[in-house]
Length: 130
Image (cartoon, rainbow, N blue to C red; front, side):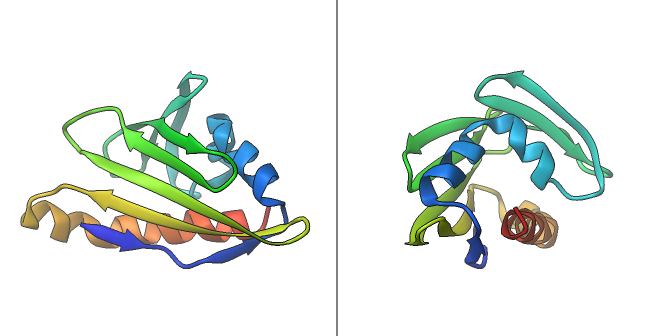
């Protein structure tokens, strides 16, 4: 299952945005209002939960400064990645697009597509207001 978020402009250079996202503790600022848990596991990993959803642990899987950051699920139960593609479009301004990619059976994909799409929309709109 693939979900492509919309590209949004951020008032940070590509390097600054990459550095911000590389510090996973900053994801707490980007989470939806219905977050029920956010906890750092280590410098490159965190666990979060939204009300009514199971806990999800993410870690940095790949980092290519300043244009690409890939977070992936730590557990094999829900195998997915969330990739941030960053492009500098002006000095101190950049554009980011989030891509979700997961390997789910059709029933699971149907159940989680809407909440994941909403989650990605929230992350990107919160990045836009940084």
